[in-house]
Length: 96
Image (cartoon, rainbow, N blue to C red; front, side, top):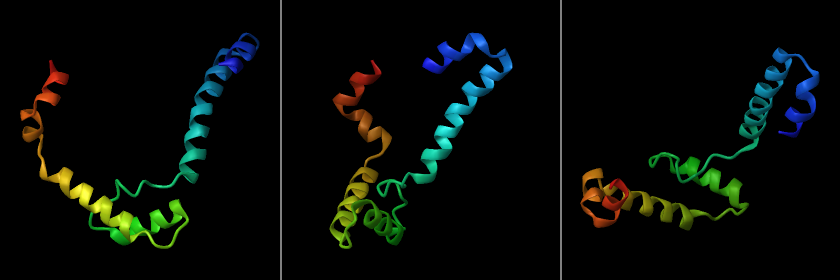
């Protein structure tokens, strides 16, 4: 915002908007290049990829306990479907 207030009055309209559009694009490219993928949202069948990601993220070689914990959590959440969750009183309050 500071750049917009300082440089806005002094540069042409098209250059101003080009610079303002370029800033978030650079931000996305820079951080997507260095960000690690979340092991939790990795598909359930790909446990070797999940282990690799956790080893990189944690910096520890033995992550089998955490992988098993993630698998159990995913299995528990996959057992419930949308209609079973709506039957509960808590989620109904959010829809009203």
